[in-house]
Length: 145
Image: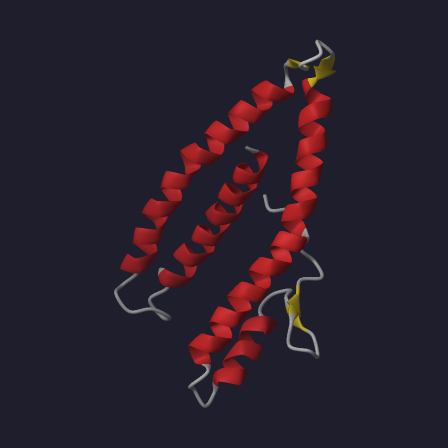
């Protein structure tokens, strides 16, 4: 559930970004209609995030009973799971996602004479940097929320 919540939060923020970009009539044709469509999708994510947050809060506030009858504080159990999932989300999974997305962007502009310049401009707008070997890394990943 924690992993799913982190994915939902990431999706929510991606949709918010896409809504802003696709809703800008100076960047995208259609008078902002593409951004409006994305806003509907983002709105659909809201109850998913709320449900998961509520369920995890309830689990955190309960005592867990193991198969051997041992009792465990929900705060300890959810806290451990949260820390592990967050580290994975900001670590290996984040790096895999960055590499995948960067590959898609590079492929999308590969045939353009200004493709490399577009990629460099895109990278200049955020915190992700390209290493000399071509891989990308975000030195300031921050929390997904």
